[in-house]
Image 1 (cartoon, rainbow, N blue to C red):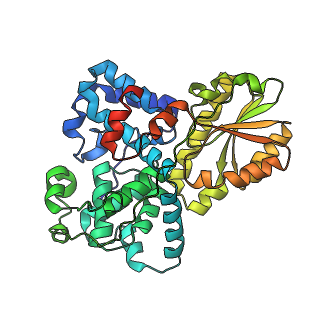
Image 2 (image 1 turned 90 degrees about the horizontal axis):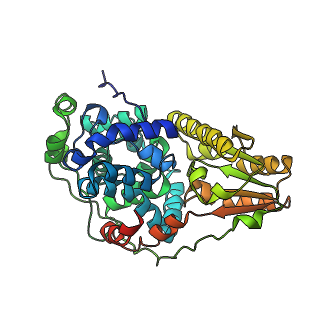
Length: 406
């Protein structure tokens, strides 16, 4: 019988995320000494990543709360881990070609039958602890960061499977999975992010960091992780960074127009954003069923995103004092256009999606609205632009350059 899937909760609303943050703050100061350990229930890490992926919580909110409790020095490593997600987003925003190349590669690979890839992803690879991690991901939508690194390394450097298929598997199930952190983390493990540097899983590392309650019953196959050799993948230098510009849209420019706010699952905090000064006549959060189907998101990921979207819509209605709603739709372009036309909108305003599946649909959404005489206005958070434009090299240079933004 397979080992049981662990049980723990992940925050899908802002209220739950704030409560989780408050619960974690007392131990945030010892995070650096415990963060690499994989413990039953994962109580040694915050498990706030699904909330930052959807922007139910902002990175600066988490950092401010942690520093207020323990001082900057006491939570420096915790803050670093929170800001890794924004670093990855910035790196990919400046070099979107890495995303498009991954998608092209994936489309080609997905047409090829790969029985071994299916077996490993199903938790039937024969290395018991890696099979456990695969079942945990499918069952919970979460994996500890260290387990993600080990599993990706096992997939690439031990099983010799295409990294793109592994990245797609993670993105379909991880509740916190987004295009940037997922794609670029897999590239890093593969040795494609930093030339000459691959990440190799090792048995000794697992035996040091995985709690005996988890690892001891799962010794089968550990010998395959004794001395792995990095897969020989061709490194291609990334394109030169294309820097981002701030979006300027004075609230007074909306005077006399009927605007509506479109919420999506990449940023669900409009009340603490450049949109906060608007006076929309309506707000909507759409769950794009066609996109989720195309991406093959798991049932668990879809349900999590539905809850987060519904929460964002309810908060938007309360804050903006306007009618708001949540709807799961089959065709995102048609649904946004029909909604905007129904409410006689001149403009649809949204926080700009990051590079990824939803951003890939923006040209079609923009055109569908334009065909009905409606303008789509996309706004980046200025603090995001300032931070992401510093993602020109490695994380530690990014950390130095963005210290004043935290």
